[in-house]
Image (cartoon, rainbow, N blue to C red; front, side):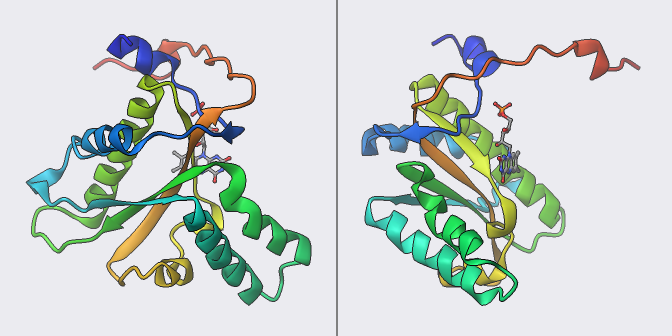
Length: 183
Ligand SMILES: Cc1cc2nc3c(=O)[nH]c(=O)nc-3n(C[C@H](O)[C@H](O)[C@H](O)COP(=O)(O)O)c2cc1C
């Protein structure tokens, strides 16, 4: 696919089912992720790939987190429990903060966000679809601990991945003049 066409036509998808990318395809996707700009080459981005029984483990983690919140109804707890099954594969975006005199935490997170976009574009080029979700389950110390992450590590989001099973969204048409100014 033409590189610009790939960028201009990428849309997120909510209805995702199999097939999901193979190991060989995911190797390329992660290579693309690791070509994100990265101040001082700190390599703070990493990814947890979840599929098959991993989805069951993640479902348990989400359910336990929801059950801990005494304000949540059983319906909402069920929603958290079922969240991982919205796609056949999930990539958890992790940022591992590293002390550096010139690279503050925000820049390190921006680099992982750029890696996420590279992942989404690589998947789109391979005719897969995905959506980036956060909600209460991201930036969440309890969930992070359950996933064996350390204190300096943070979940910036979940990329739900698969093949679009719904109708492909239209790319919104936006007026460039509303977003760009010239000095
Ligand atoms: C950091 C971040 C977090 C997001 N979290 C959610 C979320 O929790 N739930 C959701 O429905 N969309 C979320 N979105 C928005 C979708 O990923 C998507 O970008 C949006 O639906 C617009 O669709 P488009 O990418 O096709 O333009 C998030 C986007 C970003 C960048």
